[in-house]
Amino acid sequence: MLRLRCCLLSQLLSSPSASPASHLRRLISAAAPAVFPNPSSFAVEDYLVSTCGLTQPQAAKASPKLSHLKSPDNPDAVLSFLAGLGLPTADVAALVAKDPQFLYTKVDKTLAPVVAGLTGLGLSRSDIARLVSLSRKSFRYRSIVSKLHYYMPLFGSSKNLLRALKRNPYLLSSDLDGIIKPNVAYLHECGLGACDIAKLCSNQPCLLTTNPECIQGMVTRAQNIGVPRGSAMFRHALHAIAFHSEEEVAARVDYLKSTFRWSDAEVGIAVSKAPSVLTRAKEPLQRRSKFLISEVGLEPAYIAQQPAIVCYSLEGRLRPRYYAVKFLNENGLLKRNPSYSTVFTGTEKTFREKFICPHKEAAPHLQEDYDAACKGQLPTNFRFTRAKNGL
Image (cartoon, rainbow, N blue to C red):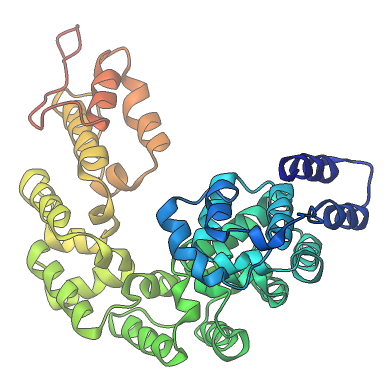
């Protein structure tokens, strides 16, 4: 019976001729529970295993939270409703295992109105199904609609919102008026526009749910590393130092100084231009420093002025490009030496158009060797094959 109603729900939701209101009425009707002649014989733990897909240990843990459940009527209706939304059986099992009381939720009084409200906000059926899995308990409360009414324009799209919820499901349970809105207002005061806030909070959604005083402390630390409010790098600075103490940030700055042989002024320039250098792991930074200073021969002051170089992959970008340009220089295929800022920071398409494609005839193996180097398939001492004309 449950499987029959699930099939019926899917057909109703996919029918192009009916209005959304008609869909919803039929969704509720189809989710109406079947009548069991002997409710007293209902065994919750068996039901969780056989119908909801939980493992025996999961069912044993969940069943005490459903001690008042005397009949499968409401759980059947809930499962049918979720199936009608297109929620996979594995996701349903995960949902019930984490929030067994979801099975208590009334379809007509809660789930159906919530789905209607979310549909009105522009969420698709697949978006709503994903939201059920991410929001867990919050989907059992009609207040989720008003919260998403606020979050949708903030994040700019359902895709961005769902990504943020995956990282921080507490967005739906946090106090909207007491925590979220004051944090957003403060970020606006710091010079961040709506787009900047959306990007920042998509990557660091915990910023929105943290205590407002903590946000203010992060702003202070971002300014202390030389990135003022309202600057183009301020969003990146907040992302880099978020949830790190002043001592932790200072330790990262000191490590950069010693690794790249920077003075106080030089590390300040580097961090203000590319705050993301603070987020890079120590060992890769050490290898990039050795390569850029010892092998390429760049001065620490030059690297500080072009700190984005430090953030690029050594094996996938810096080393292959350096070897390619070195080969071209050694064989007289370049009219003048390009700056390493141009070599390292340009897009892959630009680099190939400028340094690889024009030399296909003079250096027929260059592209093949460069491609292999980018994939890490060559030893570090690889020398690009010389052209057949002896260059």
